[in-house]
Amino acid sequence: MGGEWANWLGPAEWQAVRLSLRVSFWATICSLPLGVLVAYALARWDFWGKQVLNGLVHLPLILPPVVTGYLLLMVFGRRGAVGQFLDQWFGIVLSFRWTGAAVAAAIMACPLMVRAIRLAIEAVDPKLEAAASTLGASKLWVFATVTLPLILSGIIAGAILAFAKAIGEFGATITFVSNIPGQTQTIPSAIYAFLQVPGGESAASRLVIIAVVIAMTALVVSEVLARRVARRVAGS
Image (cartoon, rainbow, N blue to C red; front, side, top):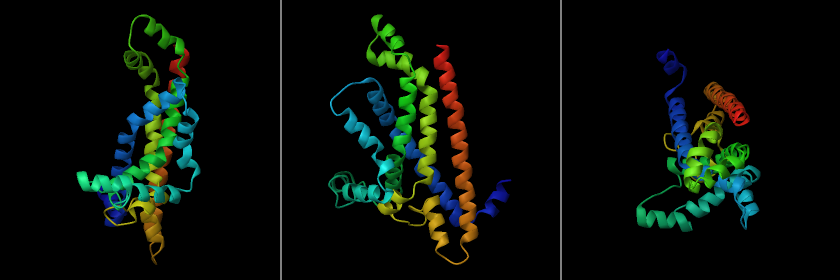
């Protein structure tokens, strides 16, 4: 079976698939803690600027992806304020690197992650958290022992959706890190590149099939987990 897959995809296609999985994995893992924190803040806290934060979180869904990529280039590029600092002091370069692709994918996927986790938190009865607090538990302990177990499936669902979104990210990524084979060329950018050359349609079609399979699998798993969250909360 492995040999059949190896023959079905060419070296450049396999390279794009591996890089996409790597970028999407790290984009999801690195953005997950911040996603949980932001989702909890939007669901449970009242503070000045809450609507501004909510707008910023969802802004990548509204802005053209190319605009998001350009803003990333201005901020995290070697001449950008943050990018220049990271380069000079830590030797970290994000623009035109796979790490930059992970940053772009994380930002584009974050709204879906935050929304899924926020809905899971809002489904939890605050009285359960209040009851634990009256017994002397700290807020962090209440979250770890009461809230987190109830929203765990929601967190997983949000992470899966973010992973699927990161797999399909194109506009922001190609603007920020370009389309360099073996370095920044993910599945979407590889499809675009194959469609620009004669005879590349078959390779592009194979990558399209892989992208569709990954996306559909993620959506099905996310839906199953979301229903499981609803049943668990209803049962509590």
